[in-house]
Length: 240
Ligand SMILES: Nc1nc2c(ncn2[C@@H]2O[C@H](COP(=O)(O)OP(=O)(O)OP(=O)(O)O)[C@@H](O)[C@H]2O)c(=O)[nH]1
Ligand SMILES: [Mg+2]
Image (tube, rainbow, N blue to C red; front, top):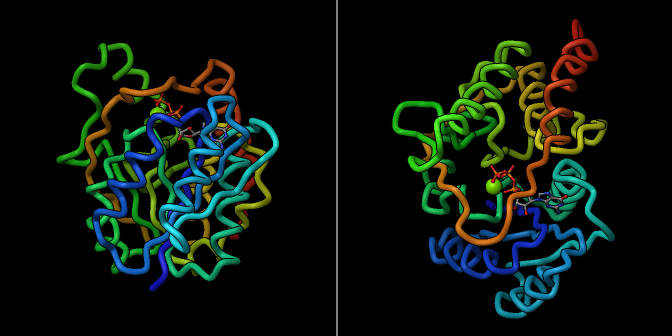
């Protein structure tokens, strides 16, 4: 079973080598990584190339011209992983908010699901305990907002730590989306629901990044707030 884990990066030069090493030290058979870099000014693309030399045949890099958002990077990366013959396709942030040591639990959950999600909002999961109350509140609100409006059967709708069976990803038109920020991740979950896919949620502790800077902006949050309503209109009564 070939696993390809897609990791989008923008200015993650300090995180990427440690993350790749943590992932490969799990010794999961036939486990590959695909880094999708948007020409990061901090040289993440070159760092990824040198990792490709360190792990020949196990790590490859997609270089995109310029920063175009998480969604576009994932569309590119997920398609690439399918074309490369992956049986399981992973999604993951590069900033260590998605604990690599939970990957085996996600894989196990996939044996009885089409899509396994690393979840902050199921028992055993959580967000950084040092986050101020407003930040915890915002994260919780964003989740509840998307879950309620779209009727999603999951507790963590915005988290991008996911594993897909190949058949599940092939069953949804993920390339048709116009979402560019993290709302792309919500849209994928909505498409999965419409396609009748089976979800599993695995608890994760989501720690704040310690290296590099967040790419979250007000614009990305506004896109999510508006787009959730558009998605509901767009796909209503449609079965994908
Ligand atoms: N290729 C690519 N990667 C991106 C882009 N924007 C964000 N990323 C990556 O997507 C992942 C998540 O981005 P973060 O900046 O951590 O944003 P976040 O996790 O949504 O927000 P925080 O809660 O602040 O961590 C990281 O690996 C980023 O490097 C982009 O435009 N292009
Ligand atoms: Mg992050």
